Figure (cartoon, rainbow, N blue to C red):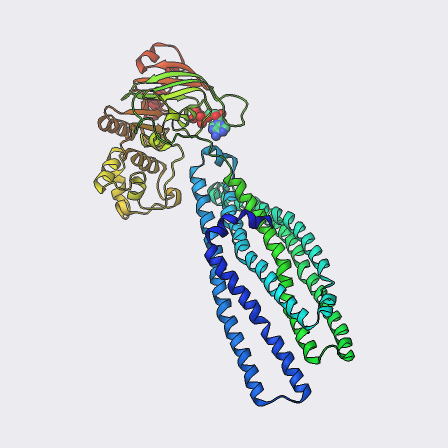
Length: 581
Ligand code: ADP
């Protein structure tokens, strides 16, 4: 029940709707008392032989008024209470989404997507149920239960006490089942998260699964996880189904006591037949509040498990801290790397060691080295996808942490290796970071990225919808659209992370030429495997195992007998062979 306290902020916020709903529930509870009483009175009148036609109309009228009143009130309390619960889910869903968008890469590395989806769906649904059905069952079991018991006590307090004897047993059992339910529900939700995760991964990787002919294995793995969800939900259902029979037995015992002792009182003359009829009808009315009471434990336990899961997620700190205001509105100027070491979260060995260099504004930096040498990591630290370096990176003389993330990222156009295109038009994909960009700007960016001609060939030109992850486009086309997307904001620093790998040498040359022309005075950082992509750079650094092993210009590096020269000669030879030279 502590969950209701945890949700106090929400009940406060929605107090008008809840108060109205609760008041209506109380009126329904009072109106419910009328029919049993009327039946009892009519039975007594018939028994005494004094029942008249006008009495019939009077009592039938009263029953009709009570029924109509309950109909209207029941309709409105649903709108009040369930409507508020839907608003709670909306509010929590929005904050969760807000939280997701603020979290860094580290968070997404720790958490699985399917798990996050389960939080945003199943868990929020369970919380919504607590704020809706939970409140209803609590209020209804207390008001209906309370008023009916009082009405019964008015007829015969002795008989009421006798009939209530089994109640503590029910309270104990329902709370015991509730705690069992809590544990099993938690497990069921976790299994559902894993299944979500598995599905998401399989659908994402369907091409790989098919290429390697792993459908059967994947279906088997899915079947197992699906089975696990069923088993765990069956456990929940098994405990859940204990509630109703338990309550029915207890109600039956109450009925038994009421009829046995009630008839005895009628025979003794201390109770009329009409009173006994009213009393047992009231007892019938008690079934729902009792069921509701058991159900309440069940709903609240589910809500509790889900609320805890969502709160644990919300409590995850945003691990990239940023100041309230940027030290300067825009990041610009020289970029200086002074990294002693950098470790990825929970890793034992450093990914980068002793990285020291200065990139003057307007220069191009080329980063090369074997796969896994740390090139991408070097770039991710500049856009603060990860934090926690020993040392410092500064931009225009200010530490990166002195900029808000927005200011920092506004100055940087990043084209990542795993480019992602949204299921939208080509134009919208290019204008993604600059929604107010004009059509001319979109075309300008596309021309710079040397994709304009290709786009014109698409069925609807710039209005062509590209499928999820751009399935209908070639790798090179996707890369160039991603480059156009970064170019449209005319960023101070453009980062191309192996973004020319899928285009041929000639296209690469044209794009680099366009960049040189259109981005004069602006900084560009390029990582590449093909050295021709960085040959013209003012500064080239060669990384190996997270360390700089060579740095300089193309000319100075060619004078040394190092990795760069060897690789350059090798690539030249390969090209000669390829072109039949
Ligand atoms: P490159 O871009 O030169 O291929 P990366 O910077 O991608 O190299 O990777 C450098 C090393 O850091 C690799 O050993 C890689 O496995 C590791 N690494 C990359 N990203 C992460 C991450 N998010 N968490 C832990 N280790 C990572």
